[in-house]
Every structure is written in structure tokens, then in C-alpha cells.
Length: 350
Image (cartoon, rainbow, N blue to C red):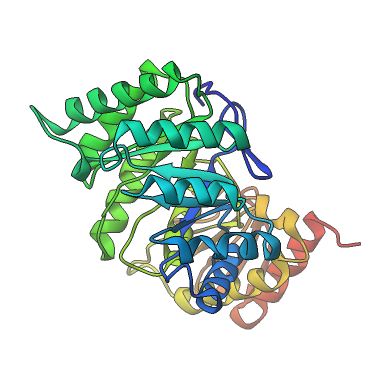
């Protein structure tokens, strides 16, 4: 990872050697506390570690102290146009402010800096391609705008800064973050904005965020989809685990299936996932395991020898193996039971 400045957001630290943190954003009116509570609970259950919400008016800011009292997770107020909403959000206890300098004048940003400094609240300079004036191209325009506003913050002795430069385009977003990471050592919040919905949107997010993280760029991430926030969080966790940056669940390796298969791989795989899910909560050490579920002898145990434990189908039977070594052969109706027994032998329960 890049060695970035460490910033405190509520009870979390980002940057430096700290893990990449998952940010989610609510999608209901901030003033509607019933909807907010329900959505925040779901987001936390799915793995959100920082939650951002929109502040459109003063009524929205009234929710801040109530939510802060009920939840321990850090909250971010997302502010556009009206600098005064940033001021009162800070006064009411928000953990971090996100502003878009593309729609707030510098004289008002200076007022936000003053109050943020007084309350020791960090600010994300959140630039989007849609809110900056494009001169030659998206990348150079975003970098020029970012340098101008970050220097303005520094000239006003404010250094508790997080930067984001988002576009809806993978290549341009990657280039923006690569360039800004060479100029400043502030933490970076990364993502593909307005990615859309469906497979293309998910693919854009995985590619854009994944490539940057693989290069050590990025301290917090948010997947932006036209979908419920918990769907965004699931994709974010998948990206982090796929890159071995964080571990949230056991990695279950399974083959794509082909004509060699003589067992019911699909149903067995789903049953394995279901059973692992039942025991994972009380046995979190299982999350470190790689578990293979293979359909034939070609894919396992030979090709799956990197797995800690696994099963491979044969002619109506299954073999059980550890680190590529076969330890037993069982009928289909017994194989999941034997797999689970041997899982517990790897991590004995108390």
C-alpha cells in the first residue's frame, strides 16, 4: 500500500498501514429516521464500516445527533451547494464532511475549514467529472481542479484531508488517481461514480477499484450502483477479498462444470455454502480457509491442492482431500457431513 497520511474519522483510522475501509451511502431521506435506522442496520450487517448520507436541508441535520447516539459507526455528511449545512452538521457531531468544490465557492469553503478545524473534523474533497469545467480532457481538468483546491486547504492550514476524483469511466478514473497519488500523500477515497446497474456496472467497479487497490492506491472504497446499498457493500467486500487485502468469508473454490462431471455439483456446492454459513459466525477462524468443491478428478484434488480442504466428484462418489492428499472416499449423501467433520478437525471448537 501507498504510505498515506493517517486520518481519524470517528472511531476509525484510515491511511498509513490501516486496512482499506468499506464506505456505504444511504438511499433514503436523511430526515426519515425510521427508514434511516433500518437501512443503516442492514448496511452494518452486510459490512459497511463508514456510512455517508446526504444533507439537503437543516431538517436533515437534526438526524445527526440521534443517529450518532444510536450507532457507533462513523458518519459522513455529504454536502453540496450550501456551505451552512456543513457548518451545522459539524456542530451537531458529524464525524466527517464531504464537499464538492465544484459547487461551493471558495469564500464559503474557507468558512467550512474554520469550523472543521475548530471541531477537528476531517473533510473529503470529493470531485466528480460532472461538476468540474472540462477544458482539454477529463483527467487533466480534474487534476488541475484538485491541485487548486487542495493547495487552498493547505494555504488555510488545514491538512485533515481525504481526496476523491471520480468519473463514470474506468480508464479515466484510474489515471486520475494514479496522478493525484504522485502529487499528494493524503488518503484517497476511490470508486467509479454513477456506474449504473447490472453486470456492466459491477464490472466497471471491480476493474476500476481493483486495479487501483492492486497498485496500492486507495484507503477507503465505495461501490456506486443503482441498487440497494447492501448490494454495493457485497461487491466492495468481494473486491477486497479477491485481492487478499481483507478476509470476510471462507474462499470456496469450485470448477465451472463440464461434460466429465458425473455428480450433482451445483446442489452440493450450494449445500456446502449453506452449511459453512451456519457455522462461520461462531467459528470465525474458518474464514481463513480455502475450501474446494470440484466436479471431477481433473479439477480436484490435483488442481485444487492449494485448498486447505476440499471434495471432488467421481462416478457417483466423492473424495475428501486436504492440501491435495486424499483422505477418504464417500457417497454423495455423506460427503458434506464428512467435509464439516474435517473442517472442525482443522479448527477444534472449545
